[in-house]
Length: 299
Image (cartoon, rainbow, N blue to C red; front, side):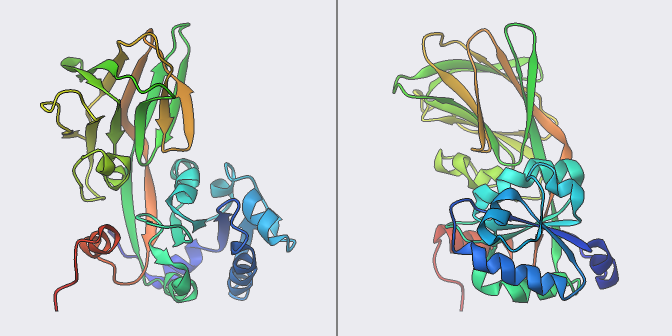
């Protein structure tokens, strides 16, 4: 985590974009209040399409994809899914994101909605931290020779679409064969994603600023198949063996792509990094204790 002077922060955040969770009508009034708060401080505000629909107050609107290129800071109002929906665009534009939690668990949207204005005051006075997170780049080499690529902050997941049958696949790392798995699927996650689907599948928790990759089979048929923690520069290849099921590669839970046995999925470190802002005294282990219910704090 890094701190920067207040003068630098205020100058840097002259333009702010608001991204909102779809179908969350209660955010509508809040968007107007936040916009007013920012504009009173000389900040230019732009809304994504969803925030614009919820607010309808005449503020400038831009697509969520393009928004990070038009602003100096993105504020995501929603849950972690809302933040993830803009993360790769923000990382590519090198634009930091601040998450306000209108969802449930919220490992990325750390600020409770009740503390919005306190946290905004801290951010615009320069009193906050900046966390740089590694991302992954997932690529499928199609049977016809074409290549499709996605950048993800949390994870790339090989999964079944409907049938409950076990699928079979092989994993290689840096060209070296690791194992053939029979399982419900496979998760390849960043340290940020180690608190997401990977955690539910029995994967390890990794400090979010670390650079590492988790390879976690989902409900493997053999108990000997355990999650792996690999160096950040590991190049992971997944080859499907199963040929009679509909399999997809899902990216941060936001997108999905068909994936069949004639194709190879390759996952490696993304050249872009994601910058997550936070304010207030929320140490990482405090967040874990709170979100995961590890027990009471020490007296």
